[in-house]
Image (cartoon, rainbow, N blue to C red):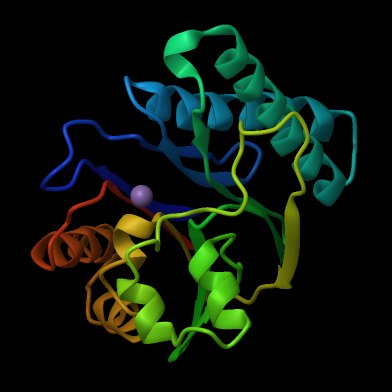
Length: 237
Ligand code: MN
């Protein structure tokens, strides 16, 4: 299994509240984008991915099915963050997105909450595998906004679902068959807020290897403003 990973603070923020998790032993790859002041966003995203990895490893060991194990692990991470936020004044209101991929032989399972994303690249196609839980996404779905308007909307960062903000949580789960040569991209909105899918595709396809592709994606987001933290995992399938 080959992959590349980068998390970058961006050009404006004083903290990187994004986190990533790479655990090839269990086939887990995940990104999380935390929010909340006073380090709370970082606490939320780090906690989410630590809990995800721990709980998932335990449940998979007990031969639980991948979808069930993923959902349970994300829900447990949610409870943990909610609990930390309830007990600590300085962390009140913290939350995080999560986009987690569990890779099996011929299938990937993806758990999704928030507006980080998973894309599958196959030959010259790039397909977004996840749906954002965001206000602008709802507006696009209802026909109130175009995709282009959504990209520049002042409330584009408002989430309709996140880990840590309520004691229980609905987790979207997807599964996709994969073929050799496919590439999976997991990323936070610090990338997708600046690069369209066709630009992402072109950048990756014109890079000589995974590491340089990931670097080039981050550099392009930085070159287009880079106001947010940027996190990218590229996984060769
Ligand atoms: Mn972000």
